[in-house]
Length: 102
Image (cartoon, rainbow, N blue to C red; front, side, top):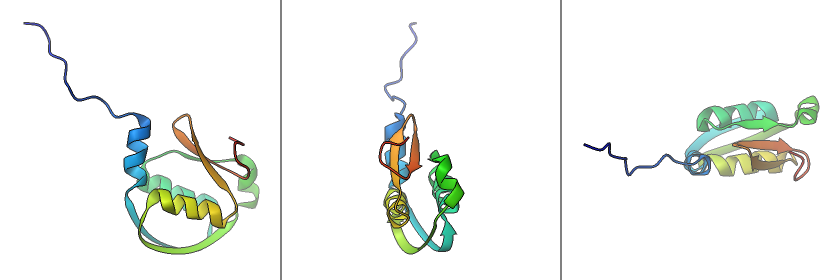
């Protein structure tokens, strides 16, 4: 008998990231460093968030409270309120001070 091939295929990184970034989060961050906010989102989603090393020197703070917001939307707000940018590349999201700095 010949081996059978499963019809189910593995999800791509992009598909897994889409699912994880659409998970709902409820958080309150008060004067929280960008690095700590990104660590929280990374822990919740299981996705890789990498902060550009120069940003870690200033590590801007954020204050935000959200209820039932998509993790991806929260990441957009975190980067927007700290005047940073998030870009996906090589199975990670890079947080940078300028677009395409990753």
